Amino acid sequence: VTPGTGATSAKKVFSGPIIVVPKPSLTTPVMNLQCSVIVPRPWYCPALPTVRVTPAIPATPTVTLADLANFVPQTPLLRSEPAGWGIVALPVNFIVTVTTHDVPGRLLGVSATVRFTPVRFSWTYGDGQTRVTTVPGGSWSSLGLAPFSATTTSHTFAQAGLYPVQVGVVFSASYRLGSGSWQAISGTVQRPASVTVRISSGSVPVLVTQGCRLGQAGIGC
Image (cartoon, rainbow, N blue to C red; front, side):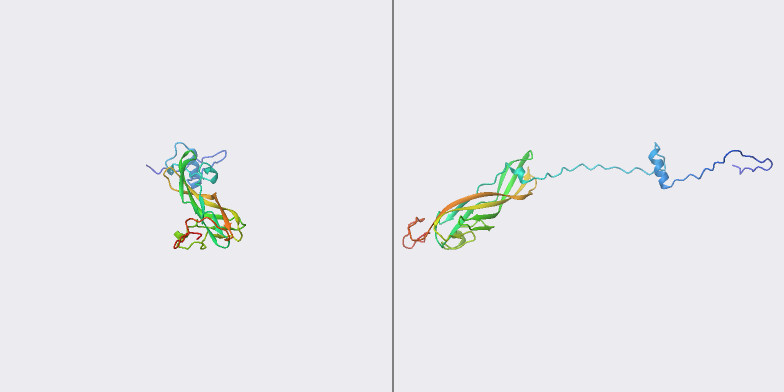
């Protein structure tokens, strides 16, 4: 509570080294060092950040076509119009019956559904000619066409003979686990179908779908 007094008579003599203690410093590096080693932490240390742990979200598994070994798309049905025969230089109409469909089963150890969607049709007509379409074809009547009209999937044979006609139906695939959302799968799968047609030169009789009576428009009449 008093200012004190200085030495006025005797002079103090020091011996040995003189140690100068610097003013305490709480610069950021020093404070960080002290706060990291002193336990408990000094009062001047900033509060530690709160670590929030976010629950891990299960990753969606990557499914490939190899995982679909137990899921087989339906076998398509191929038919010709006229049924099983044709005439040289006149179109024979081909129709493949196939739709988008679901196949249930188990995938990655859980209940799943795989959906197959036809996206492309690769035709081989047996005479060296091929074609790729995006439609399965339709009958002449459903297309509103007269018999022996050309269609997207019809083919005209140049010579008489027996021709094995094939179509490869290309499917895209998607899946869902349980009642989850649909997930697309990279790549496609293919299922074949075939039919045989006998092509006549037109100079010999052929069987027709109905009797050729007056006023009837049966195929081949």
